[in-house]
Amino acid sequence: MSDILGKNQQTTPVGVPVTYYETCRRIEYLASLGMPQVTPYTEPAKPLVATLPEPRELLLGEGTPLSSPSPVLLPVEPRRTVTPSITSTLRGTCRKKPELERFDMDAAYAAFIQRLEQKLDEEEARNSKEIGSASPLQ
Image (tube, rainbow, N blue to C red; front, top):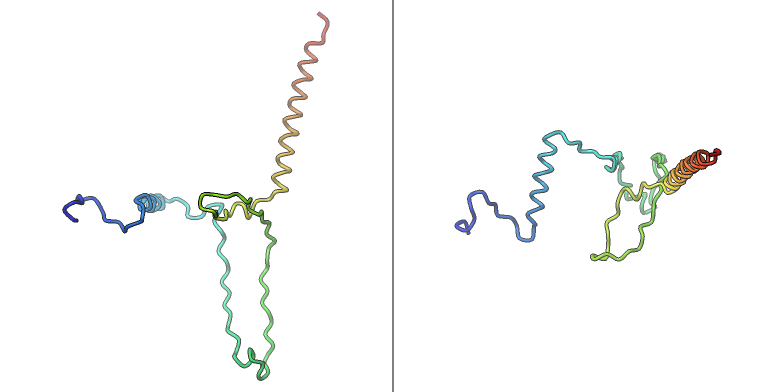
């Protein structure tokens, strides 16, 4: 097999597309140039919480605890989610996109209405200027 391959060619595992390795090399190259590793869509790191397992006696109801453990509550920020549309794809399933989980429908709708109102105001101003310039006596 080494006779068939050239000096610069690599052997890749069966089933792994060549573009995978090209993409890996491209990412490594961009990272070496200083490409940011965190993007606006990168999920923030979750805080690590160390928990101890419950003693077996407490789980079975035997004995009494020496001190009552106080529950540790982490602040949970409200999360708006958008249910993915039911669309059949070739694979039958699709991956959840993080931007859909963070999408704020109310804000998007408000921005859309605001843009429409601005366009209407511009058209009304343009029409009033055209009507005003055409109305003087000739």
